[in-house]
Length: 478
Image (cartoon, rainbow, N blue to C red; front, side):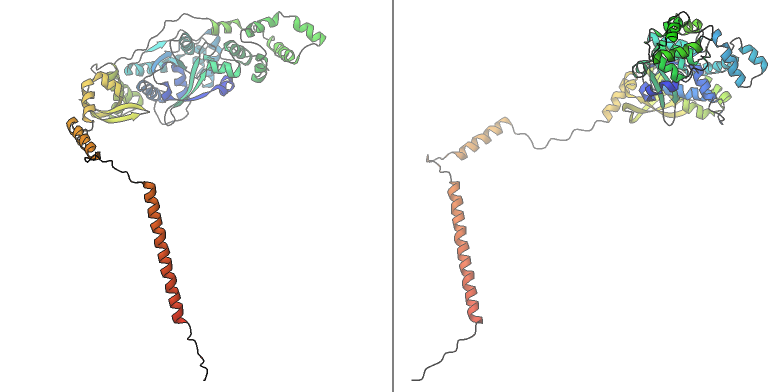
């Protein structure tokens, strides 16, 4: 869970990211968050849904080039024992189990983690166990720069020092996750690590119930009046500060001071406020053995056995989902034997803009299968096959068009052109006067127009004479 309502408070800084954008990153994964996330899906027909989700999520990350470091939960801090007991009680477990959980034992979670660890080992991925909370170690690795991000559902990762947290990890069909960057939270919301810790003390978290009667809105308004580096000292000073008594008596308090005074009165009802144990849990810089990602050879027999026993998968289906991991590991290991033989490059492919090849492989027990792999892996592992395929796809060069003349032929043509322009008789060649020629042609056209006009006029007159009535002549007698 983490800090109460913190994800809602941080929602303005949330960035929706495609899982493809995680390509090549080192990521620490709080394994318990994925287990709990799958358990909360509700009723489903899938057997051991948390194992199924773990396989497909891990496979996708490995094929994406992500280097996942899985962190297992260790022994819960004493501060969290009551919280664990309440959660188990909500699951309607037996009274005997509840009494064990009051000591911080995580029997059921440990059992599920062992199954997850077995599955991951068959994929060639190692897990690391934290001394305490898994998100604490993940956050510490992110703070030290060992990993680029943390995958967890717990919002107290930021209180442990995480800088980038990914949550709501969704596969098909969206393939997205929500990204929260601490620098964005600080810039947009004005909430640094110590302010978030103060918020957990006021509103509640896994280790502290919070101050009764103080909500997130009033707490945020109070925190806005302080800088991040002075907020914890301000909370500590509430028990010894006499300034408030004087100002209340003299009625000289500002609106912000009145708001702080109201929160202070409620907080001091708890004699342990602010809890130094909670502050120490989040801020103490614990030394850690830095884990390193190492992808060893995936074991097909181990996974087939486990998938049949815990997931009820058929062998053919299991092999079709598992062998692409084997081929990718084989290529990244520069051709280390994996039980598969590359037969041919089928064709070119483009996956999210990445140049790839569709390959055909052969396995003695399974038969032929096809996978899609990046071109650069084929080029470094099978350079001869890559070059042969590229050469086979080259188009033949088209033949040349007109034959180029030789230098001697060009010189002969130039001499011939010059001879044609010369006047052998030695007389100067007169160039035609284009202007006069144009005027002459125009004059001839005008004469022709006048001639045609005259002919048409004469014909009209002649036709009118023929159609007119004859004249009557009167002779005078002599």
